[in-house]
Image (tube, rainbow, N blue to C red; front, side):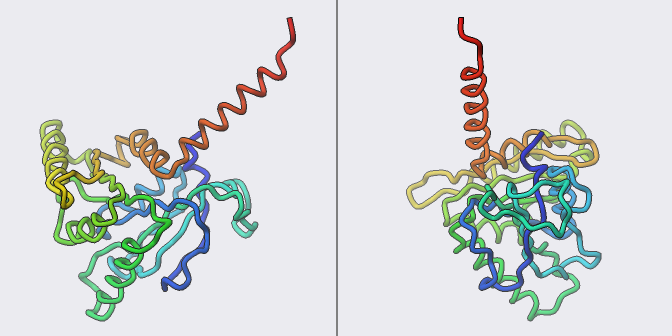
Length: 241
């Protein structure tokens, strides 16, 4: 079972001062309001109602945190999470659909989101959700350029790949990788940016995305340690010759 299936709502914040005091790695999910961010989060965590999409694009202004570890899905939602056992956080950032919001709200969103992704030490990586048919909008580019100076990884998930033909999928992936490769630091070195195709409907790319997120969150190290403990336990319990 994927460790992402352990995801459980932890808290929601509307101001940076209210961010969790936890020190575990955070993997943030960002994207336009209609790019399929909530759907992607839900299918990766195997929970239909974990992340909610606003009925009015751009209206959700909160940052939602979901814990990995410290609780399990079968627990009642009101049961407390054991904070000491949390191993990582999945962070659902506000979708940046601006059509229905005022200028003041846009500025507030920019400050909240910009400050979080540029200054949050616990933020280990960004998952950028984009519609495979319309990737790298102006707002997607802004997100990339906000985050790039941190030097941390970005993994781009191109959703709705089922809407593309095989040739279109190949072209979209190649062009997206070329776009990401065009970003270099002041020494001319490329940033740790990766990309994949994804479809919640056809279940394309789920295993690839899961493995990448687990790696970025350092949860693969936990799995390796757990496996080593199991092996040691089996050896200790084995009958002596």
